[in-house]
Amino acid sequence: MALIPLERMKEIIDFPAAAETLLEKSEKEIKFSLNLKMSKDEIICFDAFVVYHNVVMGPAKGGVRFSLNASMDETRNLAEIMTYKNALMGLPFGGGKSGIKFNPYNVDDFTRIAIIKEYVHMIREELASGAYIPAPDMGSTPQDMATIYGETHKAESVTGKPVIIGGLPGRLQATGCGVSHAVKLGVENILKKSLNETEITVQGFGNVGRWTAYFLRQMGAKITAVSDIGGAVYNKNGLDVVKLLDYCPTSRDSVKGFPGAEPLTRAEFLSVESDVFVPAALERVITAETAPKIKTKMVVEGANDPTTEEGEKYLLKNGTRLLPDFFANSGGVIASYIEWRNAKSGNQTSEKEVFEMINGKIEETFFAGLKAKKDLKCASLREAFSSLALNALIEAMRARLWI
Image (cartoon, rainbow, N blue to C red; front, side):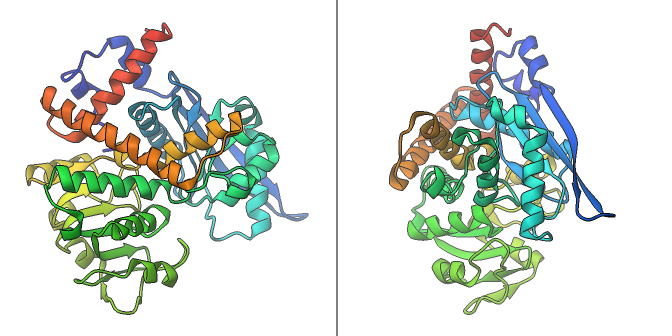
């Protein structure tokens, strides 16, 4: 689902027809092929995509995804989410995204670096001008961003770099930091509970899921179940998240077989009763088929677009609250803004300051969303946050005389 249809938003806010025209399709789409000569007789080719959805508020900002499932449709959808995420958080960025269609875990380091360098070569003007600013996404890493930086020689051309070469302390944990704070706000202000008495399940133990679980455990919540592509584990008394991080230290490792926990099937994991369920893996995992199996009071979307329209309708109809992706997982792009700003100004920011800025923006936006839901009589918080983002975009369009 990701975003509320624009037709529905016209029923909620003053939505000029000209603004709708500018938002209903991407501003720019680039498709190209990355071709590498491996030997005298072998050439390998990978499809690549870059999309600018809307850049009224600033340059296109969004991660570069490495995946066999990368496509123009997926990149277009993710770029649109970034438009609303940046607008909602008041960041001077537009919505962008890129993707390269390959399995990043099935190539050697030399080939991986060659793919990234060719990607930079093909969109050099986009990167050098600052029109598009990539960052890590699914399948890509800070080291990949270092390769991009090595090709552009401009620190502000890419975010999510290793700290030692101008990256931001806390950037790796930033998205999980933001998701965990969104969970805290939702638990305390919507479920009216304390985190210390809250049971949470986390789907996905990649960069977002692992740090979400870590921060929530540090705040006193009980993480009872975690799953990833390799398996799922459960402990009714709470998993030892620190030991779990040691057990599977990278996103390529699996929680499967973790000592001191019961193994679960995928179906069993979805059916674990919890106060909060955090989908932090792939898109479209909460559907009309899976939603009835999920026994939780609140869903906080850590991944982009994890819930289909039908899945969300079922959840809301049955009283499950939902904090949407473009609000809950915005910590990563907030941190990217800080890194980009520092690269342009020469400033430095500590990890503590980064986390405080993320949590501050998440908190301010959360309460603005609650107010908008009440004032506008929105059916869901997704509608409320969408109204805030759209109003910001419309205001920017008027300021730039686009409408």
